[in-house]
Length: 211
Image (tube, rainbow, N blue to C red; front, top):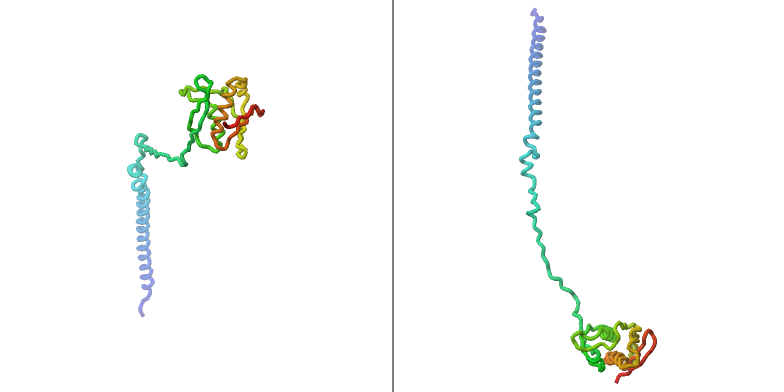
């Protein structure tokens, strides 16, 4: 018979040898892995400082250049503004003032804006008096104001109401006639007026018709 007692021993020895080799290999592998992990951690720790876009030089390169206040220039352009609308039309009217002596009435023509109420605009211009270089004199007392004016076209009559200052000329002298006559002639130049009724503070004082 053959002796089989050596087989278990050889097998056990073989297993122990393999276990020793395996353990030795695992230990070296573990040491190698631990060393690789440490080196990787060091590289990761150094990477932001070396490759980060926020490093000093790259931050200066990436930052936009801000111009100083001296380099900023503002250009202003002006364009002419065109006003819309038709030009104002004017009309020439006749105004009656006294001559240098104040005894006679003299016609003076003047251009004024053409408006809807031409009778009112003409009398208000008359109350302003003659031009300073015309040599003519005002026959209506200074400060007289036009309170109201009403043109009745069917009757061709104009009713004008003045402030009390007009009463300064109503003293029965030639000044009274010239004051009222200058107003009547100025109004009767319009085809729609042939008669003028004068009022002062609402009270009728005289009536003149176109000659």
